Image (cartoon, rainbow, N blue to C red; front, side, top):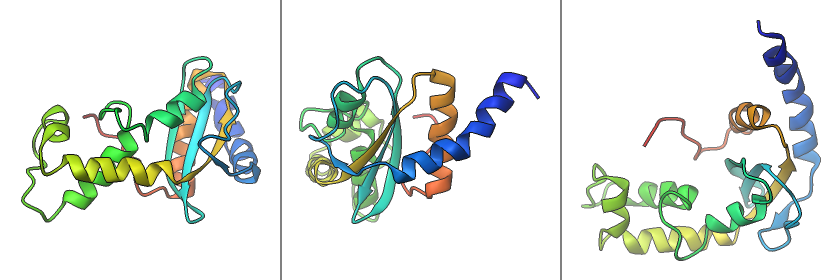
Length: 155
């Protein structure tokens, strides 16, 4: 095994313990000085979605994008997944492209409500400056926390 990869893999459980012990914040309480890393949305104390911001100084901005009314499917990805779940078993054609779906007259209200739902959630954040560690930890944390809305397919 690659030694750098092995070193990161050994760090993941330690990072997870630190994340679990970190403070739950509202999206507005997140320190804007945090650089880059991982965030986890919680609803009623349950972890729902793990995301990451790999760009410097963007954790808080990235968290806010998930619930901003003007955000599209590329930035409010968690809300988009919540809206798709609500749209299942309706007449809405979920096989449309994401661009077309977010503009669908029947889907739009579900998407708006999903962004409102995300805006009320709490979040834990962990600064992780290394992009490889972030990437691996995002998947590890989602699996460890059993977040129901992380998906790994391309879209």
